Length: 404
Ligand code: HEM
Image 1 (cartoon, protein in one colour):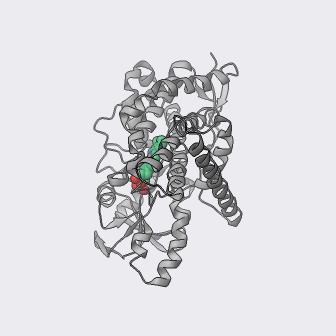
Image 2 (cartoon, helix red, strand yellow):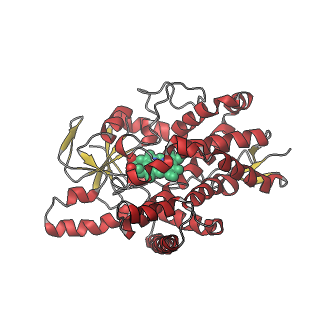
Image 3 (tube, helix red, strand yellow):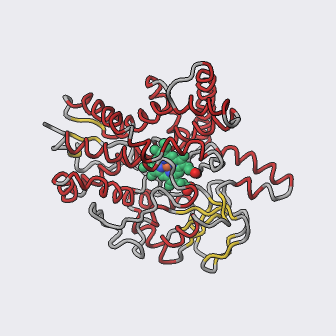
């Protein structure tokens, strides 16, 4: 049976130009065996229909403990240690499930819509800061600071800590290549957890008008939340809330610059922005792979037996370019209708922040297009460095000019 490695999935070919890479795998079979980060055998889903089925299949869980707790003592004990590491990593937002209702109401489309004005102000201020220079790195100067400022403000975290957060979060979400990177990640993890603990204790004493204060108050009034649970919620929101959206903004703009006709259509009719953002979510897949799902029991899919306890990942980028679901999937079509992309996942773990991400994406693009009519890549020949990451898809920098 065909088996690929993590290195295959992290090759520049697969990351930069995913449609042909995954078409090749999908043609062989809808489920591909691959070697997981920890060296164990895992599965990768590459077809749209199987992706949809798997993400909504109750025989799979994203909490490894639920599988391991049924296994015998010694093994369960060993696995719970790895699970704790998994739990706080961005690739899989594990035991978030039972905490989700506590935060969900802060992210409804109605609540998020109230942030529109503030997000617009932040976007404008970021462009004001670079306007006279006539050039910027669209990633460092705009795509990152926009969502991180929004999520920090929402949580009530001082803006001056923004740079430190970016460094922590980058270290935490990266797929480590060696023990040195593993160490950097562990340190960032520890520092961020410590920062959150201090924040919680400050907000307990002096609550403000922010999400962290809300959660702390709720701990006292409604339901006792453990310190660990609170830390986990904030940790997940901080990490999930900006790396992803930064990728959406950066890679979407890159895609538009590489498709000048599409860009022109959008400039001519900005009312297309919401539809265009859906297509850009499909096309760029800022979260390229779902977190792992572990089989609670042996499951047969398309004559493959997935053993109980084995991990299955859904390649969202592959599902988003499955020709069975999308006409000419390799083409960017900002007017595409009925776009049922899986960029935000599906089922009970569907992205909690989707309304916020959509709004930020729409404001970011409309502001760039409106204020920078001559935006172009600083160099047409420059090769972009794509992040070598299984979960997050984006470029590390995007130098542009915008002579006015
Ligand atoms: C989950 C994508 C922005 C918070 C997810 C999942 C995907 C995703 C694919 C499901 C992962 C899985 O099934 O394993 C994205 C993309 C974004 C984005 C593409 C931006 C373009 C955000 C933002 C927030 C957020 C802005 C919060 C402020 C979350 C949370 C979960 C999640 C909390 C876990 C939900 C659960 O397990 O119940 N996201 N996300 N995301 N996302 Fe997002």
